[in-house]
Image (cartoon, rainbow, N blue to C red; front, side, top):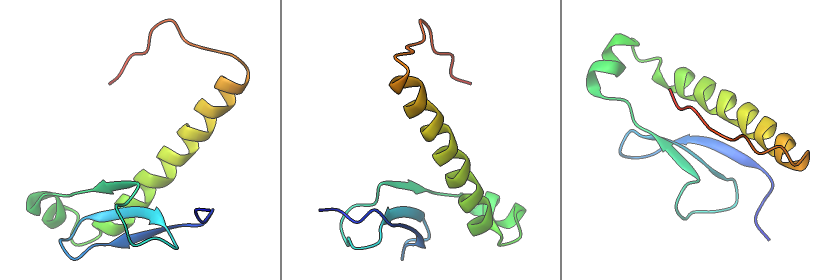
Length: 79
């Protein structure tokens, strides 16, 4: 059974990944910042990635709540 615990790690290639804490396989998601973005963020890209993942988890929870309420939007607008 997969671990219910998730961890955010920096991979050897510089990508930031979200994975289950007990797995060594493919991460659930990865975020990659260009060299320009890393420079612009003055090395604080890990903190930005954590905030992005946190926001994504909140939205995922809301989506799951909506599905439990049998709410299915007619159209989804992606920005």
